[in-house]
Amino acid sequence: MRLIVREEYKWRCEDIIRVTRIINDMKIWFKQWKENRMLKDLVIEDLSDDTRTHKVFNSLDEACHQMDLSRPIWLEATIKDFKRGAKARFTRDAFVEEIDFDYLEIEVLEED
Image (cartoon, rainbow, N blue to C red):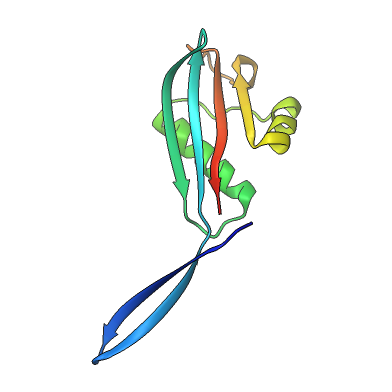
């Protein structure tokens, strides 16, 4: 995992204090598909210090909240696809409630 170091300078009592932070950034793209057409999409950026797994789960919760969806279930095939290529599809089988699209696709765009 690549870490970005961002330096900030603050003024205090006529002295410059350099503050260095390590940014651990992740962007995940969520897309709703129906009949090979994208209906909605959303990019969630997580700057927290959580683990990769927690970031994915938290981003999925946020995306489902913003898209007004129930949280999908991670089926074995979904987990396997996500581990292999940082991309997965949640089909109708993964949702408890009825959905009006074919599947929700999740893809990690950027991971630092």
